[in-house]
Image 1 (cartoon, one colour):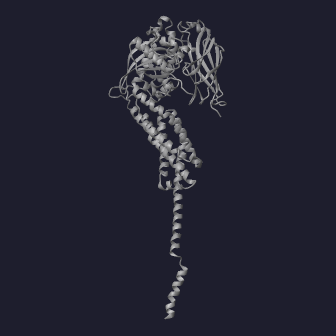
Image 2 (cartoon, rainbow, N blue to C red):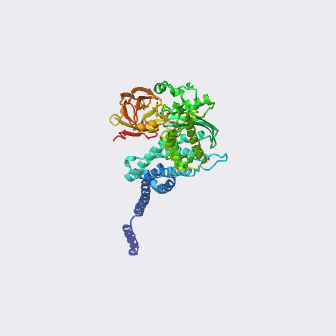
Image 3 (tube, rainbow, N blue to C red):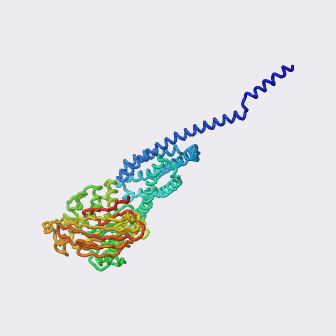
Length: 602
């Protein structure tokens, strides 16, 4: 009995010694399980990470292509590219939008990169899907030939564009704020590349967004969407240069309402006989620089390089002499008309002349004067000019034009000063702040340090068809960035030969100076600067002045046929912040050659 009884105790004692404790057994499996889960999780995140990296890399590679297509206004190619780009961004965002992924964002070193990859993916996806693609779709659906119930242009895309812009003003700041939370110092190059590109795009978009939104609001009011408007369309003649382009040769008064455009009056510069000054307050600095003709002669009211000045004077002239109260003034010149003809195609005038983008400037600003050479025939040239503007407008009103070419023509003309607009309503005019359509010089030296070189013919002639101009500007902006000096040299060259000079119609030749053609040159320095030196060179006179918060060098240059002359001015910048140099000027028939050194600092 005792042996039998002892055996079980021996067995139990042995089993207890050989088998692991239950707690240790459980802990081992827990550790193995956790390790397995971590391996699986790391693998899971790693696979998704590869997806995100591949998609972001592919998206980054497409950005230059998309940018070029946007600049070229190639809407078809742009639409296709953004669809592909959207796919990359969407897949990257979907791969990173995962609870496991987000949990690993707390892991040291790895976490900040996962967080950055997710935020970049989401940012790209939001921008493309909520702003870029809807904008491309809206622009792509614009049909100039489509008419609204009142028979005018269909302006509904303006409302759609405004909605997209409002959404953009929310999305872009949200994306910018989100990317601002990324710890840049811990981000790998594979992520920092797309991140830096996105930063660059956002900086560019952010700067344009406010201007674009304001311009849309301006367009809605200006195009008579909510109420009828009356405008004066001023057509400048670049053959007789003034600061903003040329003498105001002819005018059309237009009624705009719900996409409809109707011409209600027409006039030439000769129809304003009263030479007394109009009742508009103009800065004394402007009168000092440009003289009393600025406010008393309609054709020289465009002398000052400030379109609001010219527009207010022109509006007052029409109110006084023709009894028309205008809601605004629009300026255009034959250089812009030639660009517009690229979109509409050739037009046929009542005279039988055919104007196209290749001959419009030559016919309107030179050949017509040889057809009607006597001074008694000047009204015929004015009528030809006005008819041309009217027929081109009719072609635009028809809507039978290439929208892409028209948009490019208008944008190019705005950026070169050949199209400008002014509203008599201060709140509406304020929407144009910072836009080249306003036709003003900037009031600060940021983001660019803008200088201006402008011309005014004082020969009482139409001679600038034969004038070539060039400017060269150098600066110490790299060596002395907070107070740089600037030097601008202006070259004027007459392409006339003595033989051709003798064949010119009397009113094309210099009425005031015989064989010489006199051009005033106005060089505006940076904001707050001062004239540091004048090299009169080939000028008959030179002096310094101030206008528009800037120093101005004024030269009077007389050119005989075939002559070339130069003048130079130096400016000393005041203490402050200066952006890269930009030189603007009068839109000349023969485009001014502009050289700037340095283009940028190392």
